[in-house]
Image (cartoon, rainbow, N blue to C red; front, side, top):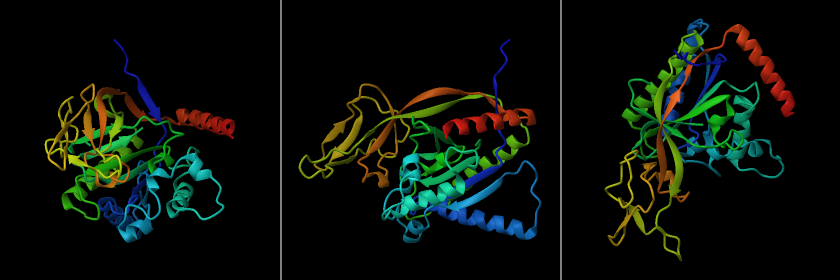
Length: 323
C-alpha cells in the first residue's frame, strides 16, 4: 500500500490581508476597513490570542487611488512588484504606485527574504461573471483556482511579496460600486482563509485531494480598426457572462457594431474568463483563455520544531548564497 506524501511547511505566524490595490474595487476596501475596526476592538478588550492564531495585518494598499476611487493614480500598482521595480534607483520623480510598492515591500517583505510575512491575501473585484476565484502561482462557497505560469522572479503582483500569497478575485461587481452579496462572499472567503491558517498552525493534517485548476494560455483582444485602433466589436451575447464555460472552435466570440458574428478560430476548446473585464480595455484584453486540468494537492501539515530548525538553517544558507 502506497503511503501518501505529506508536505510539511513552517507555521504561518504573520498574515496580511490587502484591499484597495486597485482603488475602485470596493469590496476589499470596505472589508479591510471593517477588519481593521474589529482588530482595534479586540485590542481594547485585551483579548489574549491563542498560539495558533496568526498576527493579521490589514493593509489599504493604494490609499490615494482609493481616495479618488480610481484603479490607479499613475500606473497599475499590481504590476510594480518585480525585483527590478522594487530595487531600482530612486533618482528622479517616480510614479506614485512605484513609491507605494516600495513602501509595501518594506512593510510586508522584503520580497524573497526570510523577514517577509508568511502569507499575503490580496483582495480584488472584477466586472466579469467569475464568482469567487483564487489566483496563484472554502468549502461552502463555490470557487475556482486560476494559475498564471510565472516564476517567482518574474512575478509582478502584490501577493508575491510574502513567502506565500494569492489574490482573491470576485465578481461580477462594477468598479466604483460595492454590492452586498459580493462583499459578503469576500468576507466569508477571507474568514475561511484565516480559519484554515489557525487549523494548520494547530497541527491539523489536511488530507490530499485533487482540484480543478485553470491555467491561463493566452489573451484575446477586441477586433480593431487598422487605422484608428478603435474597437469594432463587442463580446457576443452568447459568450457574455459565461466565464469558465467551454469555448469551442467556431463558437460565437464577438458581434461587430454592424451586426456580424465573429467566431472563435482557435484549434482547441478552452475556458474563457475575465470576459469583458472593464479594467482590461486599456490593456487590449477582451477575455483570457485557460486549459482546465485536474491537479493532485498533497497532504499538508505544519512542521515540527525539529523540522522548523532545519528549515531555518536551510533558508539562512540560501539567503547567504543569494547575496
